[in-house]
Length: 178
Length: 431
Ligand SMILES: [Zn+2]
Image (tube, rainbow over all chains, first blue to last red; front, side):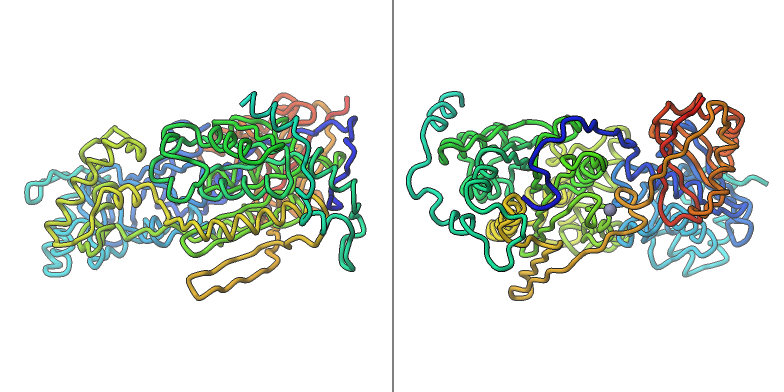
């Protein structure tokens, strides 16, 4: 027997109970309580006791999406941070990197996720998509084509989509707050 | 099973049965641990006293069970929640076509007992999470042959949390094996002493994930088409139905949709089994890699149980994709590991101490250096510094007595920006 074992049972040593807090739970607590969000981002917990499901509202204060309030759902599973959080846009928005079902093309949400990243990095990454939409990684192809071919038309489409208009047969949600 | 047990326990060990193994148990070598009790004592421990748990009765598990039984472990337990699938038969050699659909743990246990007289294998057909500390406490050693990160994290955390300083028996060495194609690793985890599974979480090969925009726009591989079907199309078509990767109808639907997309983009190679492999994230399993890793794990189990030779410290990596390369190193414990890292301190409070006062006590504690701590128990938040909504929701707790929220002897998890890790405090009250 290696040293760490004693061959005789130590009958009188009662097992001390240890905390039942899971590693995922501790990481989520650490990530959330250390969030350092600018005033343009706000979290909301429908059930404050459930830290694993919440929404994030981004209200860009510059760029072409300024004036809109964009809502995302976050779902964290018990295998966090091995698994990335699942993030979806809750509105139908006109954005080259967000499709009409709310899927988001952000590398750190999938192929580039690492356990050293945290919720703050994901949120900052999402906000960046509104400051610098990227036509090279399109999820809404039409929006991406418009953005690279005809920037003025694209900007005007962004504005009218945010006001809840219809563009090329697609009804967008009104997200404009002003 | 009852009859197998009867006949095997009645049969004495025949002459020469352990001739080879006894060569290493009869006397120590120059480098043997001084604790080594050569001869009858160590044999008696191995064959009569020791109790070992095998988690997983799949590709690695079958090999591990056979190796342990043949090395002389006689009281083996095995847990597996899976049933045997026809696709397992190419490498999980304890199973036959007639066993398809039956519990892996049950069939494996029965097979080993029939084949190796005198060995008792106790199966449990279910999840490791069904069992509590009292169950895991009965074993001397745990070997894992799992393919799930989640299950490994669970058993690792359970074994680390079980360690009780005042009870040496609560320390259960865990040997973890894993393979992926020609690659594999075997490691020895001595909970709280060596680095644990959670410590190495960021070292893991992550499952291949393709950029979602590639899947949506420029598919080139059959996998892209399958992910298109499962990640984008499934939620679109079945908004509220969760994809069940074990449901053949669900896989069938994905296959059909992926195949249509592949045809559209002139991509070849979408098959039913590839579809299943991609969505279930099945990594190719090679029987011989399993054999190498299982053998390494079982030799370590034998050495740890007998002290007959130095055991692995603590990580063995096999890289069969570059010729046969292997590398052994000591993986270091992470101070900020949420499972084995951090610190535990005992704090004694008056029964009327408030949460706010406790926070002040923590901030003033010189040895911790903590600013803006957030506190919780395993079931509820006590006080969160952020985000604003949770700060507001927990603020009323600041005025409450800690004793209203945490029982005597209860634990509080503390996190803070200034702490690279978490801190666990155990609260006791004096009147
Ligand atoms: Zn650890």
